[in-house]
Length: 495
Image 1 (cartoon, helix red, strand yellow):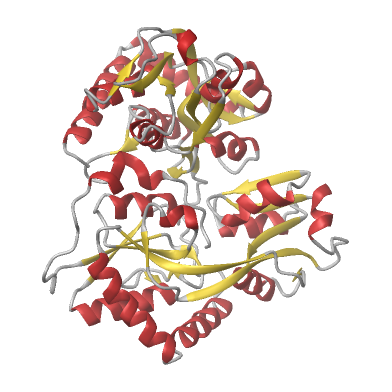
Image 2 (cartoon, rainbow, N blue to C red):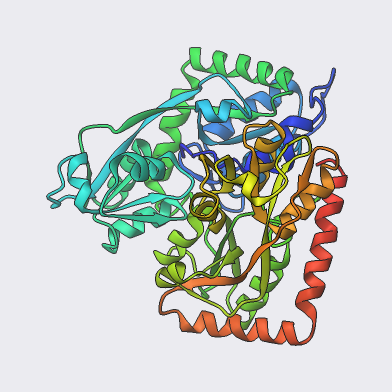
């Protein structure tokens, strides 16, 4: 719930180049809804029923579909992918208890507010922690992709942040004492406390308040207006409040509902990656994940005889999640560095790349010396960010979560130069011929590897084995050729 928008919605420049999604008459046309189903009571799994999700959001969307005479089709995806699907025109509505923020409103269109909640602190009943200030010396858990985690990192700054991938993982971190406290949505907290037989408590003071809305493509004003009319009518009738009460009662009386779990006994092999870094990982034309890292990760999971489970996260969060044990493996062309090798365990290298610098076509910059002291863009958490600061002496470094957002900044002249890996820079230069160019200078190569939790020698051994076999057979170079070509085709299609 109250998710932090990670800019993956900018993938492929959706909001800049998409035509209007509105039509004069869409009656009868399926209403495609992209949702993340671990946001109780707004959107959660309800088993093998149809639709497979339930919640406040679903009640509202079903009413919107009925009003428009359109059948509703639900696409359950990772939270960050919701914005991508809406901005690409692959979904009409995005839902999952999504917090309305100023940053998000720059890129997507929100409905009117349909509900509000707050962020609170949850601790064991016997905990000595009494308020926010006491979290400074504690281990505090929060879900990746939420404003809860952002609040921890930016405002509270506890001794240790325990990032996890789902709300169920947040609860588990408290139960098994990996965390001394957790920050979460108040309704999630009330549900957790109730179903844990009151072994935990919610501290009295709220940390912040959030307003929730549905997400639309910026061009799809007609659908947004129709949805707003339904939302306003249901709010006035008290139907939204009644829906929330009903779903909270259902969840409280059915512990475990709301989490989609693998019915197999084998623990899934959890991979975290950034899906905006072609050809390693990207969203293909059919809205599925593709790339070299996806193929190699599947082979590693098969070697370990564990089902692969993929979570899309911002690049800067990959290594913290792996180091904390929330994910088994991190990928997305991660550079192997001595500093990172202290925090995680790396596989042997499976690729290497030189850095390249992109500038606008009309820029006077033509060599490295001219880049120094300029405003430089680099992906947050990447080695490019440190390079821009330490080697290019950037006047200012603008960082971002999605590789594609860097191109947007460059095209809009918000930065003077962009540092990127050669493959991504080459793709961008090829797509935006006449608008951006690559400087004729290559910065020494970096090796890329997969990241594992320190001590997980089993997973590392499996990765090393797969990398060695596929490198010796020539498959890895073939994979890079294949996915570079596929990504160029995606770009050409205008997605």
